Image (cartoon, rainbow, N blue to C red; front, side, top):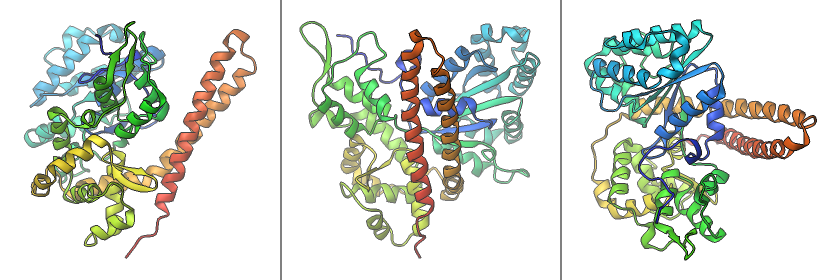
Length: 438
């Protein structure tokens, strides 16, 4: 029996589902440096790999380069990995006329400068896709001057940088707070990576892009969406448990049982790492929400009455963005059923954990910036999708009959994106208008 769901490795192309709005934003944003923040197993590597594929296929001015920093301990390690990445991408870099072999042994800063300038001379722009950027924390502790030069290179308008990591990367701001300019992450626009949209989540459950789609009853789909909150890893984790085949070999998903919803040792390890990366106040919020199946924001504020309400709302916003908390029936709940059960099981241990990896001040400053900018971000996104929708609607008037069905399908897809973006914009505006309690 071949189970079609992929758990534990990155995917792209037909195996990748959703993120359409985010891909469109990332590929078209005028920002030259973006920090993509997500919890573990949310699909950061898959996102970058899909960006690489989309930019390569688009035939536009962007030339993608995937740079994996995992395991790098020094600038020398980073330089070696960058050269290997260039070797892997040699066919698409042929336009530069560079002799790739001559870059071996060079410092990454020199390589980036030569590569970006060579592409610019060819009318192209380097799209640098950095994975596992947490490696830069060690570099900051050992080679601060080199890291400062790397920051300048990554924010150079001659290239476009997309850097993915967990929020632990905010420690760079703590380690570089005494820089004469500004901390490392200032200048990077922050984009959060979380749940799939509902259509994409259902498509993933049913494996619509696969050669072997899976039969799933509507009630089972609803249960999967409810328990996973459209988290791509958890969807596939649960679907893998539910997958069976009938006598003809057709795959289907049975209804989930209580046992199917229990996190295993590996999943519990991921949750523990995420918990360790929470600040003190975030841990208090998570444990307070976890005490009840559903809780109101007012009940949460009462539980944490010793904290400033607006401060709680800022951190709560960040936890929603990363999927630790969700809204259900206008109330707060734990982000997914697996996490809820793990929190109940581990509660006594978690309440005794006092050590933290992150200073609240560092992440709070980044959250305040994101919280303040969110309405403007969604307004720009709504305007972009509206322009794309109008352009496609005009082209539908003159398209040949054989292509009309495809254009109408694309219009319907864009309309769903537009409605979703408008809802996000309205929610962001409503949050900004909440009264600040004394």
